Image 1: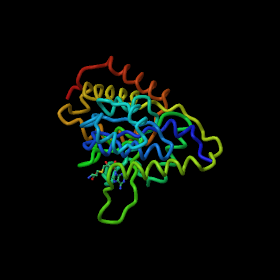
Image 2: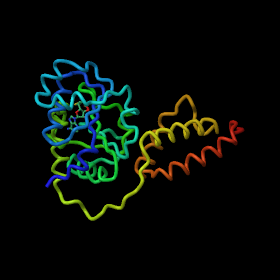
Image 3: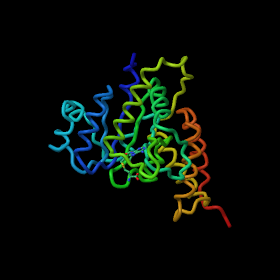
Image 4: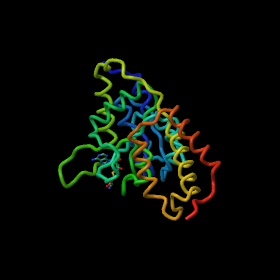
Amino acid sequence: MVDAGPLARIAVVLVGTTHPGNIGAAARALKTMGLARLVLVAPRAFPDPEADARASGAADLLAQARVCATLDEALAGTRLAIALSARRRGLSLPELDVRAAAGLAVEEARLGEVALVFGTESVGLSNDEALKCQRLAWIPTAPGYSSLNLAAAVQVAAYEVRMAAAEPAPRAPAPFDAAGIDEIEGFYAHLERNLVQSGFLDPAQPKRLMERLRRLFGRARLEREEVNILRGILSAWDGYGGRRKR
Ligand code: SAH
């Protein structure tokens, strides 16, 4: 039997969708699998008659879709975000196939909010967008042509989520109070300011180091309490501002 509890806490986030028809088809894909939460980040055209037409009987999901200006806004309060990508990216985010990712999503959704994040049709997710997520998932394909249509990718992922929710729940997973992605983004911003202020990080080239640090903390899955401790440490260091003498 499918456990509807976790399904209700899994959102599908579509970033920068170009074709409104894909938004409608994604809504339909979700509804067939018992998922209901569609989040649209800066869609090019929405609402749109093409989306309505492709949604068919899933107009209710489109009507309830949450439209956000940024991915940060979409992921606020989320405990785990999984980026779906057709390409391997050398980002060293932990990678999973979609079946394992769906299993993890369902497990985490027993504890809180989870997001599956899909990129734009033409180029997929940017590295910056993928690095706001803690895991990278791919749908296995024929070698040499790995790029599914966006709504088709949503359908496959939603199906795997439903199958995972039909598995008996594992023995009570060790619950942990994962920090929300907005809290983690606040920590990264604070860390970057602090590193620049101390002279450790060159403000002209913050990207590489901050990406490495995102990987590090992304692997660790920070708890809320741990983010508070790290913010406290940074605040104490803020007091010792001033560039390091060379
Ligand atoms: N040309 C783009 C593909 C965009 S397809 C690229 O190279 O990334 C639109 C979205 O569908 C992707 O951003 C991804 O979220 C999803 N998608 C398509 N094929 C996928 C696959 N094989 N595995 C996982 N996600 C896939």
